Each structure stands twice: as C-alpha cells, then as structure tokens.
Amino acid sequence: MHLARLALYLISPKSVQMRPGILISILAVALCANLQGAVTLPMRTVFRGQDRFEQLVARAKAENWKTLPIGERTAVVGQAMVGTPYRSFTLEIDNRVESPSVNFMGLDCWTFFETALAFARMLDEPETNWTPVQLLRYIETDRYRDAECTGEYLSRLHYLEDWLYDNNRRGLVADLTRSLGGVSVPHSAREMTNGWRHYRYLVHNRGLLRPLAEMEAQVSARPLYEISKRRVATIESRLRSGDIIGIVSRDGRNTPFRATSHVGLALRASDGTLHFMHASAPHNYGRVVIDTRLSNYLSRYSADTGILVARPLR
Image 1: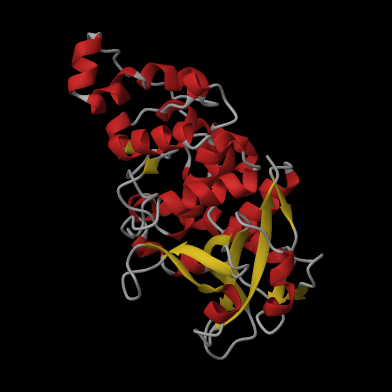
Image 2 (image 1 turned 45 degrees about the vertical axis):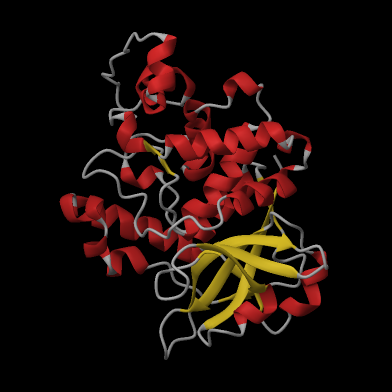
C-alpha cells in the first residue's frame, strides 16, 4: 500500500472514555506498522462499528473464546454476529485505493465469514492486541494474495476459488473438498468483467478490465472441485463448526459451467444437526442467520449444484 499521511491525536483517557470511536483515530499510526504496508484511507472509512467490536471483545474475554480450537472459535464469533444487517459491496470503499477494511454495521456473505475468521485468529494474540489495528492485519493476511495488500485492486482475492487456492497454499486453511468426495467440474470466473459496472473501482478505473480478465482466466484455468449436493447429506457428519462452506452454482441456465456464488460457515447444533450460518441477502432474510440444515439449504435453490469446504488451520 502507499505511504500513509495519518495524524496522531493526543487525547486524555477521560476523552477516550467519553468518545470510544476516537480510538480508531489514535490507532491509525499503529496500523502503518502492523500491516504489510500502510493505509492512505481514513480509519473511519476502513473500520466501522467500533462499539460492536468492543462488545465482541468483551464477550471474548468473559467467555474465554481464546481457549477454543480455531474452527469452533470462528463459529462462536459468527454466532455472535447473527442479526447483523446484510449490506452489498461492503468491500468497495474507495474509487482508487484498495485497503483492508472491516464493517460490523453491515456484512455480505464474504465479509461475514472473513470477519469471523479474522477475529478468531486475533484472539491468539495477547489481549492487549485485541484492537482494530490487529483485526485489520488479520483481514489483510486472509483477503489478499500472498497476505499483502499493495494498494492495488487486483491484489485482493476476488473469487472464492482463488481465495481457497491461495489460503490453502499458505497453510491457513485446508481444502477438504476432494478428500470429502469432490470431483472436478467445468467452471468459469467471469462475474466481475461481465458486471464491472457494479464495482466502483472498475467504474473509475476502466484500465483494470484487461488485467482483471487475465486474472479471471488464471482462476478459470485451475480445477474447481465440488461435492455434489446429492452427496452433502452423507458427508455432513465429517464437517465441523467453523468450516467454510462455499456454494457452487450453475453459471447461467444453459451452460455446463459452474461458479462459486455464496459462502458461509458450518455450525453444529447441540442436537448434532449441521446448519448453514451465513449473511443472507435482502430477498431472503436480509441479515446474518443460522439457517436450516446444510443439505436442506442446498435443495432450496435449483441452480446450486454443490459445495466446496475449507477448514481453518490457524
């Protein structure tokens, strides 16, 4: 990322107590040292929902979340965010500069699982490091190719299958899809070039379309493995709370190609049922929900053909 020009505000402890949100401004300089690069966007742009963050930190301490395995910990954080409103295009925060970001006020399917996972990873740090700065550092590790945001739009892992490839390669998650019976299916990553008008970075930077298409071609050239939705019920017992579940769908009505279309977390209920927890779009629930049994969820939409599975390792 580019060099930051962020001011450090000197304020008294009393003023911090009166205005908790100003803590974000104080942490801005520290952010530059903790992320791989530095941020040119204001912290009020890249971090939203300070009060909600502080509530989660308080619960994590009170309920000792840090003692849980990383997968269960991710699921617990996800449960704590149930009810958060759905908000589309939460990663499109600027016209030019790409930056790690968190928004606890609204989540889409990607930022839901990603924020839960990053928060869970943050809890491995000493409690004094449970801060917005540290959470953004873990977001950067997860969201960007080779764990580095360069400030450029294409340093972000835009496709779930690309995210899985990169995070699996770096040992952050294990791609379990093939070991659970997944088979290779024809697929095509082209949503962004086809729908570029929906992405503010692309609208304001048309020169990105050619390198974006090249990136999509690379993603499309790799195999995509899918566990058919007809088989999901038979492998649910092998899934764990906190497993990342990617939904694979038909890429159009009359085409054999597949594309990843949605993502959420597995959650094992007390009765043993494996539920799908996700940020559901406005035409459904419009918020983060614990939905029905995963295999039942897949039968709801005829276009959905199966799943991919990633298990957090660290």
